[in-house]
Amino acid sequence: MSAHEFIAGIPLVLGGNVFGWSSKGDEAFAVLDAFYEAGGRMIDTADVYSAWIPGHQGGESETVLGEWLERSGVRADMRIHTKTGMLGGAELYDPARVLQSLDASLERLRTDRVDLYYAHKDYPELDIAQIVEAFDGAVRSGKVRALGASNFDAARLSAALDQAEAAGATPFAALQNEYNLVARDAYGEDLQSLVTERDLAMLPFFGLASGYLTGKYRTEADFAQSLRGGRAKELAGTNGPQVLQAMDEVAAETGASHAAIALAWLVRQPGIPAPIASARTVEQLQQLLDFTRVELTDDQLGRLSAAA
Image 1 (cartoon, rainbow, N blue to C red):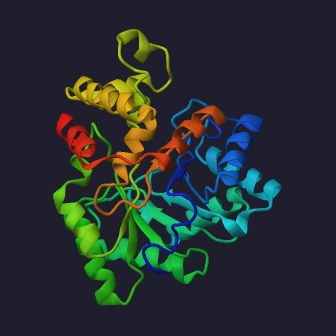
Image 2 (tube, rainbow, N blue to C red):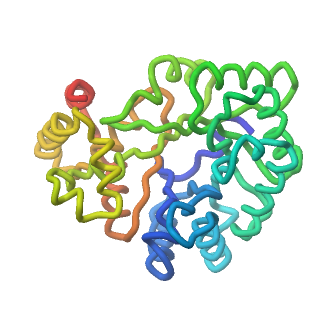
């Protein structure tokens, strides 16, 4: 499967991290229905979502998505992306454990295949050949169409691509690292060059910086009012206020929401066909979808980039 065959529908990957956590039941199903009706065809999740919540084990998001896929009957239209590698340590990348984790995800997702399966993090202590072999086995099982790497740096991703080529294994076709207007270190120029030269698709997570780039987090009181406020404050860093000021100006010029501006900026960056963003409610989803109608000028893109 080539690098972009798992890209479908509108250029947005719906983040599944909220499902089974802050978005449940009918509310979650309404978001998923609205996403599909708007032309959304890509959903990203992971076996670890949402193990950070007391009483959760991981897999809660996949379970909600599986229920929706079964009840909606749209599995054939969708590109389902999931990940493994966070619910333990390096032992998770033993070939047998990767297959075991894959089967558990498929059971929760109520499907027989995953369109894009990620190594959710790198374990630098492992020989890259072991990781390549383990995930190639997932493809050879017939249950995975394409592979991705998440939280990999340029050196290790390059080594993985070279190893796959030398071994005749399935290469990583996608990268999922953190990247947004206020956090750019995890997708620097070295990775941008690698992704574009090797024709990978970069699908960045935290595209809205845990909500900071929606513009609703500006004071300590704002950060304290949300479950994600602490992470938004952390991502804001020292350049957050300058970025929001530039976004305020572009919002005044375009009439677009801050969320739409943040995502529109992302898809104009090298190697990024679609960002990942999550929505707890249908209203939040509609705000995200607005970005597909935003046309930023070169001047506006430059000002946004310079602000960070």
